[in-house]
Image 1 (cartoon, one colour):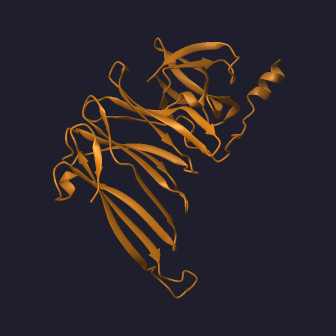
Image 2 (cartoon, one colour):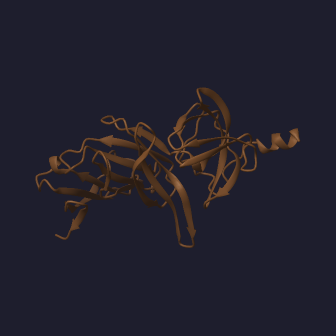
Image 3 (cartoon, rainbow, N blue to C red):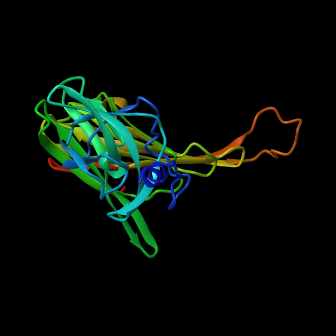
Length: 280
């Protein structure tokens, strides 16, 4: 029995996608529970003794970075991790399935609300594989006061992080919240999902994408908010820039790559409820 337990705890790589490290688990890394309720087990499997049930927003800390027993749940094959958590002011240890953990957590500097996001499930339909991503806003009592969901098509992005920025004149917004899925290698796109936070609800903003292949091409999108352009107080402009290399990157005498640059724009207008793309 002891031998079986040791085998169960043997660290294993991801089976489904052995490069999928978007949670970036590391020793002593802090995170929070993303699922409405997460079960903590004595061993790294779903049939092990249930130790505790942690509600959404509960703080946890990873112990080490070893991944155990990848398990297929809700379309995702993800491993279990050893964690530390607190219940009734008592520190405890157990194992959690990674899909129950937030990808990132940020506190709104203006309200103290917590913003978390994660993957409730994955669609594995043929020719249409994506992760369903959900953003939740929690108040001081860990109550979900707002949420937004969207599909994320994973294309070898290796890292994710969220950030707050100033609204720069965006109607009704107290801040801009962005979820970034970053591609850190040539040819892998970075996708950014943007939202305006009003203080009690989330408003969808245009998504932006960027990608490049060093010395060959680049493509980038950037949102310009009302205070950053002179086109109108209800408008958000998506500035698009494409560059195609005109330089022979195999020429060792070349010290600087020159690009043929093409610029364009998309304009989105606030109609009192949503941002609607304008046909210009």
